[in-house]
Amino acid sequence: MAEDNNLSKIISHCKEYGFIFPSSEIYGNLGAVYDYGPYGAPLKNNIKDYWWKAMVQMHDNIVGIDAAIFMHPTTWKASGHIDSFNDPMIDNKDSKKRYRADVLVEEYIAKIEAKIDKEVAKGQKRFGDAFDEAEFRRTNPNVLRNAAKMEEVQQKLVTALESDDLTVFRDLIIELEIACPISGSKNWTEVRQFNLMFGTKLGALAEDASDLYLRPETAQGIFVNFLNVQKTARMKIPFGIAQIGKAFRNEIVARQFVFRMREFEQMEMQFFIRPGEQHKWFDYWKENRMKWHKALGTADSDLRFHVHEKLAHYADAAEDVQFNFPIGFKELEGIHSRTDFDLGQHQEFSGKKMQYFDPELNESYVPYVIETSIGLDRMFLRLMSEALQEEVVDEEKGTTRVVLKLPPALSPVKVAVLPLVKKDGLDEKALDIFNELKFVTDTIYEEKDSIGKRYRRMDAIGTPYCITIDHQTLEDNTVTIRERDSMDQERINISDVNQIVLQRVDMNNLLRQLA
Ligand code: GAP
Image 1 (spheres, rainbow, N blue to C red):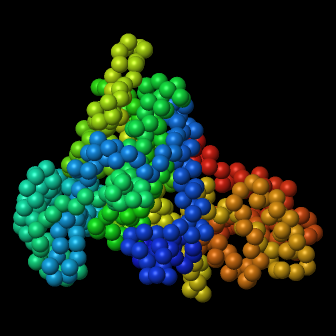
Image 2 (spheres, rainbow, N blue to C red; image 1 turned 45 degrees about the vertical axis):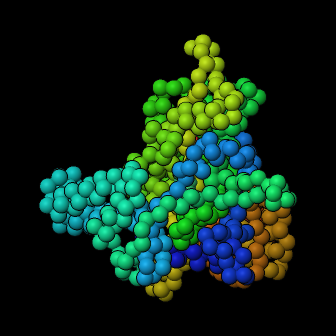
Image 3 (cartoon, helix red, strand yellow; image 1 turned 180 degrees about the horizontal axis):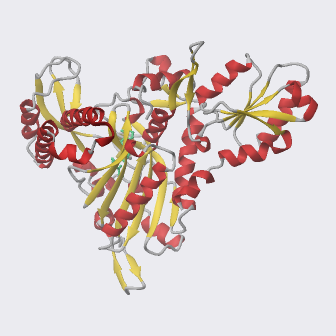
């Protein structure tokens, strides 16, 4: 992650350059709801494309669906969301701000972890090349004291999460002397549970209307279609069903831009397997998904697995892929071993057999499921956090540039066609090139402002290549191609432009790394 990136820089860049706007801004915004703008929408589509191709196109045993957002209300009874989809919340009486009790404790733990990292960095500086980090972590008294403290608090958090008694949570917050980040006070209310589902009504007349929920996860649309998909696509276990779609949660604490939204998008895949094979497939999908993340060029130190302290009501194992966001290491994707819980529950509530006849075993069973679930908006924020950089262009003159170093295959605009000046026929020549390139990839044509200003604008929206048409073009049919990150310029023949650009921005450059 670019070191000097903080969330507010990303938010203002997203707004200024047409990536993300607050929803209904002219009416004063709607909390934790966002609209994607002219460069945000295509970037989002490209992320979806990368995920869909990696999951569906690259696996002959995974198919994709697009289920409705509205589902029969019994779905949510069966899935356990009506009874268990709650967050423990606590209010600070002075600031009147509401927090998730578990997040307050997690942030406390993250502060201890940061102290350990600081101590290690100090050791590294002191001992230079002779530094042995593992030995240092094993023996340094400050590291050991903080590690023990961290372990102790983690244990207490697990106890609080597993307890039905919410006073255990409040007592922990008081014991750790956690203060409200806004008011600095430790004047807390009781801890209460909030259900996160949005309710609505189906039907015109209030008395006939039935209660509906906006889906809080896309996964249930896959589970209820298990039999339809298995039969129509003639799938044999092990096989997966993938889906990208909106999900809705009435997040109480929602003030981290697109990290935590009330309306967001998920990319989920349910992989149906034989009971008893869940450990093997859990490990397989952990490795597969980490490869997908790393193919984007992320530093190893910015991605890690995190084992869940408390398992969701449906899981027998769960780990998150965490990314080092500007707000610290946080969950980007969840990998869950969901057992036969969901299909079993739908079988019970619907009375329909949710079973698979396994011809090799000659028996029927309710399949087990490994789920991979990633938030599209969080993936967007991760890319922005990594890509947005401020660089010195010329030290003597003190000039800098803001550049969005997105992976070329995901950039919203792949190539910009720029006539050096809008005269002498350069603009016409540039339009000819644009009119060919637009069949190949996402291309824009820009003739306004000086060439320097146009390059800066293309850097800021992450355009990896600029094709510039100058007077030499009229003489020898060559143009320059400028690469965003190095700013290097190369002269190439017009006849090679399409092929060169296509080769460099091809999504297959990413997909091939997954093989
Ligand atoms: N089907 C399993 C499931 O929904 P989850 O951990 O609650 O699991 C999966 O959500 C992913 O969805 C998360 O890892 C995160 O990337 C994304 N996500 C969850 N809540 C979100 C929110 N309020 N705003 C944005 N993304 C969210």
